[in-house]
Length: 259
Image (cartoon, rainbow, N blue to C red; front, side, top):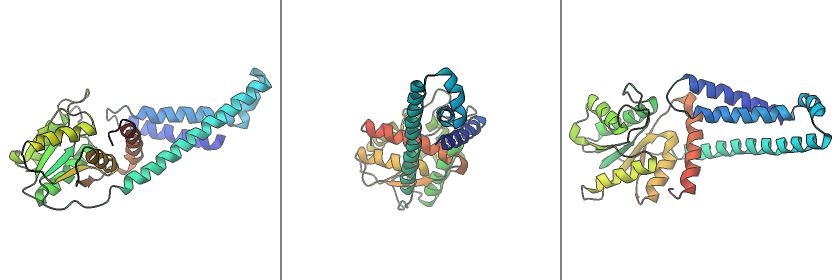
């Protein structure tokens, strides 16, 4: 187990450093580095080479207790990572399917906007998917949903609206929801805006593949049924990063009753 933990820790440290090097403004790379630190520390304690220094510092009873504790903790850590991998498979399995033509609205869920005012790559993928649907369905309107984060120069809704306008979508087809800070708020606030039009609409949700599962579950929890996903792609090498965040989001939203 010691070697498995060392290998896991090394991989997580390298991946966390890669995420950090992209300088996207997200601090979630710290989770990868935290996992790496825990795995490396536990793995070192379980390697035979670590036993000689410990014998000089600890009594045999203390050595045995420390080894047992490291074994339990290492087992739990590896089990948690396997559980995240299995949940990730389920999340990605939900990202297949096709929304019908002629939806009344598509809700484009917000994501990070760079300090320059440009959408992040994740958000740009969503906007490109929304644009494709809007071009094919000229009567569909878009609700761009997202407030302003502490490291963003404007609301995500404004950045999305400007992007769509710059790519040929008429202003009267774009509705802005600029208060939300979570996926649950994205959907609930957007539905309030849509409800002002009166007729029960047919709605699609535009988000990345890794986010479809949680977004649809939250939407249905809020009473939106039927609802369709319009999946957008994601950058392949960032998929583990996004899926780990998504797994934690699924756990949090399940525990808080939002999905």
